[in-house]
Image 1 (cartoon, rainbow, N blue to C red):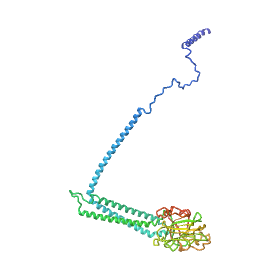
Image 2: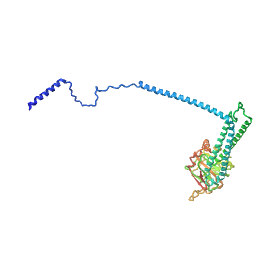
Image 3: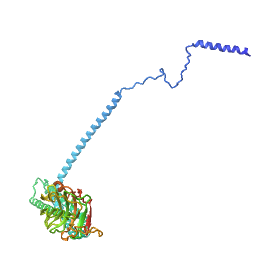
Image 4: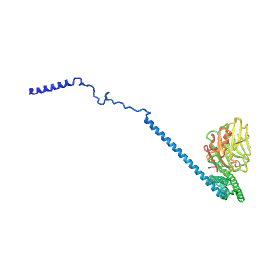
Length: 466
């Protein structure tokens, strides 16, 4: 068996030797390195693809196309604008011709239309004014009683104010419209003329007289409207007196003069002061020889500060009536239904005391309580002087030094608002701003007494209204 397989093995070995000799030894090299089949050899690396330059001819062609499109759109826009301008000119020319023909044909009836319109507007305005005045009279009869009972007349005044403003604006608008109609009808070339017949363009004498009479009638209507406007402004001014001044949202109502009616003020800081300014809006119902607005005092001296009203004057005392500043002609006894703005200022450094009414300095006196310092621990009240006030509650006993009582003759009756007090002397500009009735003086609050912030306790029949 062995001898039979031996020749086959020799034949296979000789065939292998022949193959090795045929291909050579250099063609078979054994690579013992790790096989990385994803590695790109140097011979198999692809050639780089040539890229075009940024400013190639194809990109430039695209930009050229864009610029060409923009130029074409600009040209088309200019052509459309020119076409629209031509159309507008033609249409305006034709409209002007039609207007001229209309004025030449219907100019004679323009004066009649203006006169008719003026009469209608005058009648409407007169009717509204009569109705408003009747309402105003009825409101005047019931406003005082309603204010004393509940203090709610401000809502009615707001409605009346709106109506008066509306009437005033209507009067102004109608006067303006009549003036425009008169100017358009009587100043145009074809106004007041009938259509032309032949070559005669002269205006007949009777038409001239008719135009003149219509002009006089329109002048009368305008004069009547101006008088109505003046009357409305006067009614509006008197109506504004019902409002709270300087943007104030509430007021203190003292319905009558009584020794039990007053308001206690409880400041947040002590009143040990060497200077001060006290300001307020007052609307007195009646003024006696001595009416107390503000009073501050302690046990030893109940009259440290007093701001008073006389028959026609305002007074300020510091430390007693021996240190007095008086300004005459401040109060008009015949007109006590108007709001008055009063300020009293004092400085201990030179003893300069001054009184201000309506934002103007009406009196100034040096050497008033010079070197004096207001003591702390007193009581501050409105509408009375605390020379013997009843205790704040039944459980409290009377304070020594105030054994007396309130005097009815000194009590204030009316309305009071915007009560503020500072620990310094305000400047003239500050006081003038506070005294603007149409301004916002109530928004400028004092650092000692601030209206709407500092606690104020009404007593008796005194109450807050808004």
